[in-house]
Length: 223
Picture 1 (tube, rainbow, N blue to C red):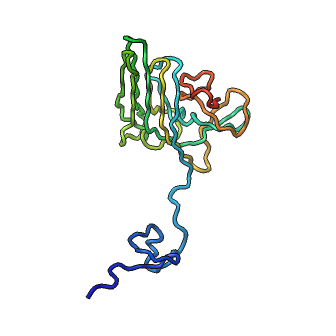
Picture 2: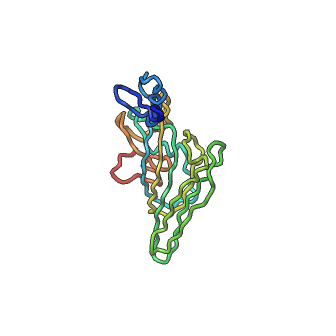
Picture 3: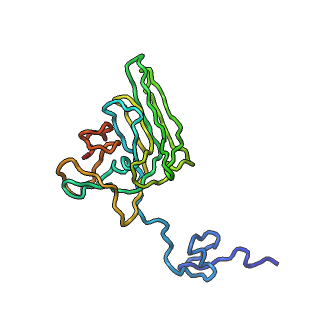
């Protein structure tokens, strides 16, 4: 005799459902046939992923980029003369660099995830390419999945990665940001009077737009 309960149905919020297809609280309440409370929310903090572009004004040689530098790429002005990071946790997804020199003149680009601080250790792999002026040197460097630098990190002066490139290089950085509700971002000082509550950008090295070696694109509001 066939088992009539082989594929049971339950009623949840007035609808007939297969318990196997229910998720979370709905599945746990399938035995009673009632959804006892609204579904859980797994994450409430603000998370944002962005590819940021920079251009090097001068050659860079093993220039360290810290987690504070990364957080300071996107700021919000607090007053006319102060600003703070919009987020306080950051994760590097990848770094790309393009560079080209005169025909027959070699130029080299390089990225290394060199973080050596406990909890922020990089993979130390060297990603490098050299151009002879025919095609751009191109590096696409992802941190190893099991390296800690590939995970969300708090703001600090510790190194996330370093960059070597000639003047005129284009640098793209894919970053994921996250905030901890109720906490302040890393403080940064605006160089001149501006309007409070404005979202602004800064160089990859954390320096103000007037002195950074890695400028955001022209037309992006920077401080």
